[in-house]
Image (cartoon, rainbow, N blue to C red; front, side, top):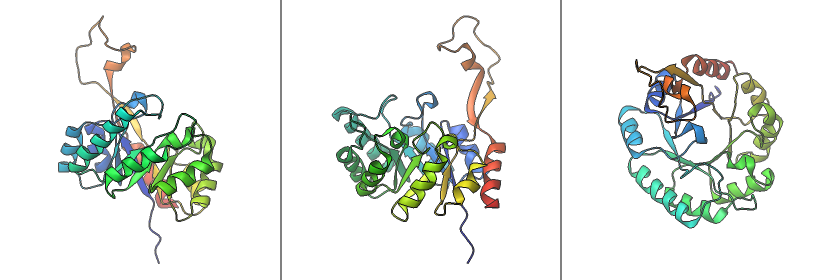
Length: 250
């Protein structure tokens, strides 16, 4: 029996990047806003537009702000409302994570958000990587009912966390899907495959294109980085193809 190939998920922060990702062969999108904060909840308009244009699944980030993952009651209420709205607009799944102040998974808040998703698949994001104990967090996330965990193995990048990710894949077995991501490189794919059980990967494949603006204001920048208005975040076809080739070769 032929083996099913790996699935490639790409985080996208703009409508342009989402459309290009689908055209380049990405299997699923993680739709976010605010790359500088590591991803926040995108606009309802962006999701509604993309659901009219694309057939591939779109999982939506639910994160009300940057910074830590310890949310108060008001923020949890906003996250619930975002799930309701984005679900009504066709979201295929959600990506979120909540921690307690002590670094453990906030199971109560997570279960409330999962209930709001009404059975749509949910990914616990890289809040997992900064939790107090990865083994304990793995079990808590499974108990909550998440379908997958996005992780760099408790390190700053997949390069550093490869050994732990392989261990997590084995420990998770068929109970939850481990989605390696966070600095993932094409050369990591065969290494992760060796552990067995790898089904999906998460790679940004991001790049920047030059701004189409012919005028750059000489004094007003609206940003700490004067160069930020000279380029636009998008996605690289070359990088996507690198991952697709690595996936095919395994």
